[in-house]
Picture 1 (cartoon, rainbow over the protein chains, first blue to last red):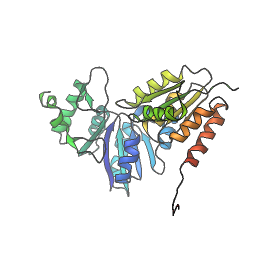
Picture 2 (cartoon, chains in turn red, blue):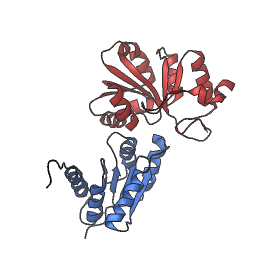
Picture 3 (cartoon, chains in turn orange, cyan):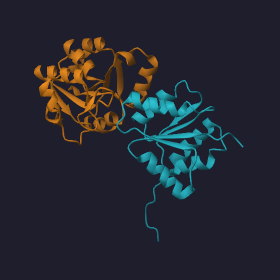
Picture 4 (cartoon, each protein chain N blue to C red):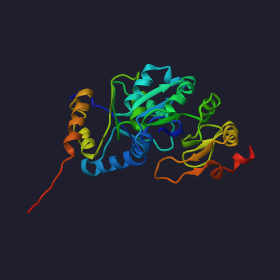
Length: 162
Length: 132
């Protein structure tokens, strides 16, 4: 079973992931792919404590790429969390096979423009999104399971103009 | 009299403001409690806003949040790091907030946090069966 949710969300582990998606998909493991978090034992402990009853693995992009295929064949469901599209694109370039990326939270920052209430993208994000789509990766905007998934391209016509 | 323990409510959507308004309807006008919503904020942004609030506490305080594992809890923990004697309390409800307001001048921070934990647990009760 393994990967059941591959999500880009700058909050990494938080309520929507643990409560909503967690209740819906019952993961055994949550992989947080984030170089900065992986480098901090304090941050690793914090993320692990945030999801009681689930094994949390906080790894670098390189570590995730190395473990990705083995995890895909493992027993039980797994979540993959990344804080931004750059991390997702890097992981895919490193060999991870991801058919669909859930976009659950890329919040406002200077230079980003609004796609919806929880997705804001800058020019680099749009360029990466275009390349991911060309490579066959579906980009679905959906914060919680009860919400209707929408394609990023349908919400953001600028994706087609990049 | 102890030094008053300050509190920051960090919660999803409008819950913190609504909870404080509800508390005021029972307790009376409330001073010294700040409310922050996580709405529309990245983890970095929420951490920064919590940090701005708690950095003004000279003797520590309480960050009161809604549920364990949510961004309010996680950012509260991260933002409190390095700011002294701060306890993050999760699972806050109206009885707990009222208990905080009634006891914030009576306890040290850790003692008050433990009292709120007990109050929160005790506040959920079941009333079943025939009543008359």
